[in-house]
Each structure stands twice: as structure tokens, then as C-alpha cells.
Length: 152
Image 1 (tube, rainbow, N blue to C red):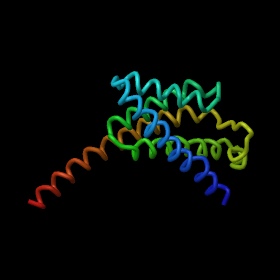
Image 2 (image 1 turned 135 degrees about the vertical axis):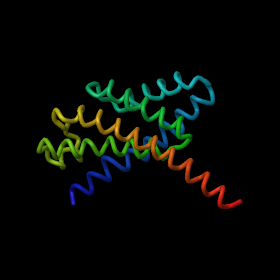
Image 3 (image 1 turned 120 degrees about the vertical axis):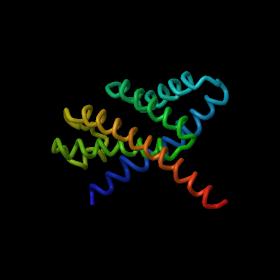
């Protein structure tokens, strides 16, 4: 039961709320006001990392914010960043499980020690996720073309 609560509280809800705010509001606003995608993505990533108020995770969160910003811009929607964010947050739960860190710790205010596998798993799984989402985009284009062809 604690694992299900951890998945919802740590992986799913923050991903949805943070993506709607940081990519759906902040990044979209920066894109329309600044016009420069690189500056807008980097600025929103910096803001994303700063608001988490965690010195140890500051640089990794900027990288995550940039990846999520790129997904938002490329996919022209919020679904892919939400999925990637939830996936990344789920890595915390997996890392805690692999390092025998109690799930209750990630639900409390106590800092967690996800172990040495977390950075390695994050890099490997985010690369895999980006490849999966790229394949998803290609499949979606093919399916859309087939549907349009059948509707004619």
C-alpha cells in the first residue's frame, strides 16, 4: 500500500502539477514573450530547479528541466513532459527500493539516499524514454496518415 501511495504522491501528482505550471504556464509564456526557444527553455529550467530549493539536486534538475522543455516544444503539448517527469520521479522509488531505503522516507520530509544507481539509471532510462517518445511520434504520424487516407 505504501508503494502505491509513493507512486501517486512522488511520481504522478508532482509530474502533472509541475508540468502544467512550469511547461504549460511558465515556458509557454516565455516562448510567446521572448520568442527564443533556447533562452525560454533554459530560463524555465532554471526557475524549475530554483523552486525545488535543493542545492544538491540543482544542476540535475536544470538538466531535467531542459529535457522536459525540449519535449514540450517538440511535441507541442504537455502529455510527453508529464510522462517523462513521472518516469523520472518513479526512478526515485525504484532507486530507494534497490538501495533498501524505506518507502516511508520519500513520503516524509526526511532526505532520501537513493543510492549510487540513481544517476546511472536516470541517464539510461531518460535516453530510453526519449527514444520511445521519438518512436511514438513517428507511429502517430503514420497512423494519422493512414486514418486520413481511409477517411477519403
